[in-house]
Amino acid sequence: MSKGFGADNDDLRVLVRKSEMKKLMKEYRRLQKYQKSSMFQAAKLYGKETAIDKLIDKYGIDSEALE
Image (spheres, rainbow, N blue to C red):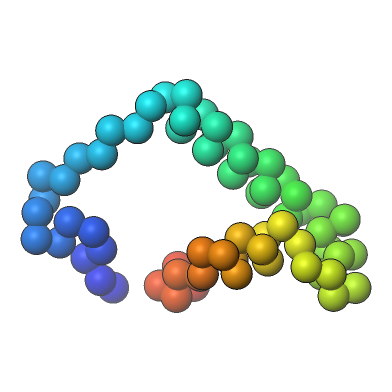
């Protein structure tokens, strides 16, 4: 597995506003709940492009996350 960001610099810090983090976590939870729904499963079986598919197309998929 790669060392990821900050492989050369172990003192890397990122500041994120709490309000932005709350928005991100809320969106993540919404998408996780959607993935577990029967509507998502039906859309996948029908062949429709879902919101998850759109995000994967836009940002790609991390191959290391699948390992």
